[in-house]
Amino acid sequence: MVNLPIKIIFSLLVVVFILIMSGMFVPSVRTKLFEIAGPIIVFSEWGVFFLLGAILIVLTLKKGVEKPLKKFLLLTGISAVAFLVFVLLHNLFSGLLSVIFKKEIEEPVFFILATIICPIGFLAGSIGSIILSVKQKGKL
Image (tube, rainbow, N blue to C red; front, top):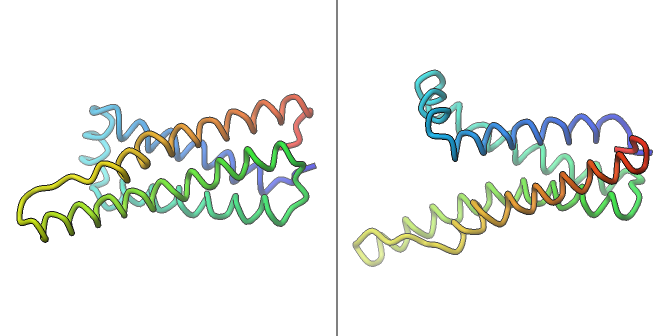
């Protein structure tokens, strides 16, 4: 049976994911958050998401999690960690290419990985974890 810390970290990760996605794709939420908190506090949720993902990976690897559930939990954690990594790489390469070529150049690969692939991976991992947990009577 998976112990309580994994369940808590997983739940917090899902809540922060919902906050990030609503901030990214619902313009009224993003505007309201920027008015209230400013960009530093809003973007700090990305750091929290990264840390919770890293903690979930470590806990999943250290605890005796059964094989199918372990794969879904790792997918969830890796997607959370990779999101911030790909966002930073996108901005780094876009800025670097703009400086080198002296015009505004967007880098699409890391952008697509951060905004499409990582959220899909996170959703697949979290939904799979929840389904397996329910099937195994609350082992998450």
